[in-house]
Image 1 (cartoon, helix red, strand yellow):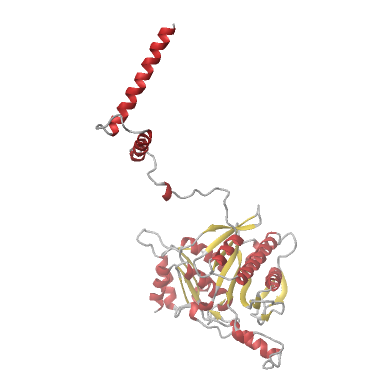
Image 2 (spheres, rainbow, N blue to C red; image 1 turned 90 degrees about the vertical axis):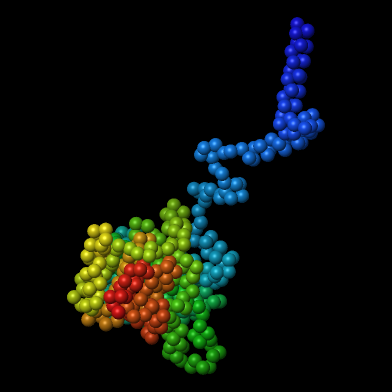
Length: 412
């Protein structure tokens, strides 16, 4: 037995020796027995790196691989704003103002969801400065917005659709950002639980509107208010940031700070706005037009010709689809995602259109242009119009660039 074991061990050793020599010869046939273990290891590593990948295997180098995003890795609005601040796109004060606006939107979203339960539907019994009947939530939402902006300590002037004149915020500790807003857009939809929204725009400080006790050049509050009005009446091209909050099947906070359009959806599980649409780009064309055709008999003949063209079957045998929500926020949100054109033109009963330039048309035009779209009053770019009055109205045509260009050819 011992002899047999010894013979078997000798065969194993001889076999190992032969295998080692064979591998070394493959590496360098001229000197088969002088290579070190390190050289053999190098040869093996080289062989592994040059082996042909099997079918279906990835050929991406480790450096080029992108990290797979975890399903639990989410970015909320606060984190996103802090990243923009760190990148130098906004300052700390603007970050606070935007955060306070998002908090106001959360409160309004909650009020809308419970409006029938807590008796917030119906009319307030008052009329705003535009002569429009105010809904209960028009008044409440305006208070929510104003309170959030005041408490931020970074807002100097507030101008709202529901206020007669701009309000200078006496609680401002630092920063004098001018915030214009429509607290509830499409408030006629509230009682039927349809789409509504909030719109806002933010302008930079204007030194001529700062109200200081030691400034003897402002002897009366009326003069101070007048300067505030002048300060607020800036063209949309001066906007630092603009956005809207959509209240519908989802609550979506859409924002631009001048480097693209980003949308955040409210996650009710966390109570946070979570980034869901990054760097939105509006399609160049679209197949949806949105006009209140109940007023069509009051419109210009050129506009009627344009709409008649849209109703005709196109190259695919289908005409454009007509959709009208009755809420500017809803119209713009859909358009940003699927393209098309929205119009609120002047008519024989409203020579200047129906929508307000300062806190409806300008912020929305800013957003759409940031996404690659266009906005015009039929003659000039909306963002180039300087308001002469706080509640000035304007016609507007806004949407996909090719669709707006087509419209302007008809209006020329």
